[in-house]
Image (cartoon, rainbow, N blue to C red):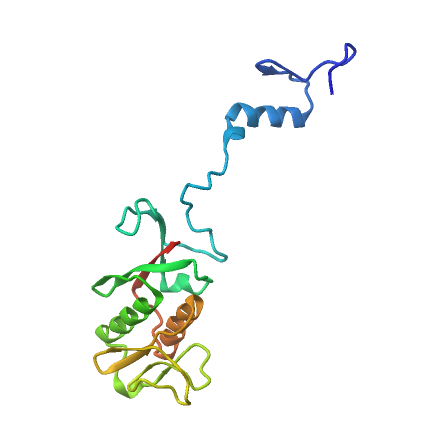
Length: 197
C-alpha cells in the first residue's frame, strides 16, 4: 500500500527510524544481515537431520570414497539407544576394540559387530543363541544358521558363529542393543559412523 502524504514511512533507503514499529525494526535487521538471501539449494548435499534425543559424540564432514564431502555422524553405543534409523541412513565405518572397518551396509555392520563381540571376549558358545530384539524364537547369533522355529533368514558365518542379517535398518540397531543387553555388556567401547543417502 503506497504511503500517503499524511503517513510517515518507518524506513527509508538505507536506514530505519528509531520510532519505527518493532516489526519493522526486526524485518530491517534481518534484511541488513543478508538472511533474506538464504535459499534452499536442492542440488547441495545436506547433513543428516538431527534425530530425537540426540547426544552425538561428534558431527563431522569427511571426504571419502563414497562421495566427496558427504556428511557423516559418529554415534557411540549409548547414542544408538536414542536413535531411529530409516532406509536412507546407512553405516559406513565401525570403530572400536582395535577394529577400524569400512562397512557398506547394515548386513556388513552386523558381521563386524559379531567380530567385535568375539575379539573382545564377550561371546562364547555357551552363551548361544543370542536372541534378536523381538525374541519370539528368532536369533541374531547362533551356532547353526537357523532360528528356533522355521523362519527365513540371511545368515553370515564368522568362525563357528552365524549372524542373521535379514532385518531393516532400525531392526539392526535394535538387534545390536539387544545383544549388548543379553550379553551384559554395560559399557561397550565402539562407535559407528553413519551417512544419509
